[in-house]
Image (cartoon, rainbow, N blue to C red; front, top):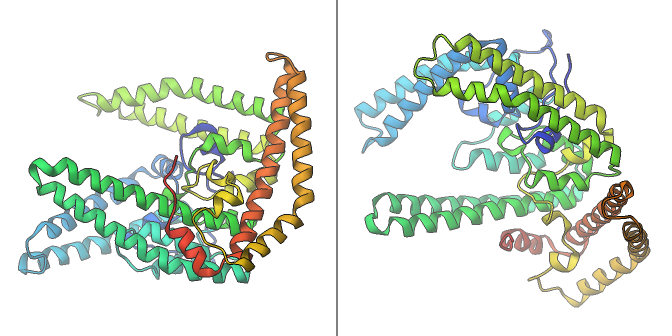
Length: 437
């Protein structure tokens, strides 16, 4: 059975990352290979891993065993005072042998988790990504230049900003690592250095979020949806997921009720099996309970797949694309800022202020239409009783009007970033994000 991929299941169930479409590998295609260090860059979510574990337990067990052995070897070498001494070189050789053993196991696993976007072009792009700190994050940021459907001016702008963001991330990561090292040996001052490391970590998160907000504003929705499908699994989860629900176009009362029903069904059906798995995992002797635990886990996997199919039936194609087009690390509130909030802290030239005024005048009729629709929706809410059936419809009408307004505001912000600001001003905008509320 072919199952559509979407991050919508995250929004509805808060269980896993988005689903992946599954397809049989084409025997005419060349063999797919993946290095152990590259596995984390693949767009494979936790649900797919669970399905792989269910269908190919011996393969997953072997990959897990080899991966754990490789991790221990690399940790031992990194802990040596001189990683390049004789002992370090022996460990490096041992690690090389384990990698050679692990690579074909992972490649075999990849044939069982095939997806339309995990093609030879994507695998080549992953293989060409240099190793280093924050590799998965920096790879995800750079994917915007890899996907198709990005306008030439947008691609040029992102290509100009990306190296500055990449460098800033590396500087912040180095600073955080220094504070973490100080905390490990600081004794009484350890808490102080831990706090400093946490503060730098928050700056890292805000900077990455600002980049994704830029992508949200300047890239077209189809290109952002295509980008989402190629992101590593740790970048497929969304911030404030349930709040993003109300940004979907043309959500209806019926859809909301059906989604709530799916959620309630999942909660009722999943509860006993989740409790059973937890009890078995905490048991002293789990050998005899292995089959029971596996059966419970399999039922949970099937339940999650059912929920995905149900969500697919509930939402329109446009709503699926809209939710997949939401970038990671960005909250619903951050997507709703006005142009005044957007430009706070930037100094515009007289020419830029005049250009901004012209853009606002150009969209004046759109704003008036939005305000009128909002007044009508507010009047409908005022006429409906607080507990009446009409209130649910009035609230959804208001949500739909506001979602349309927020979409128009994002489009306007994108034009400001692309047409009013210089590329260097956009760099400044990305590198100086405000603190999150």
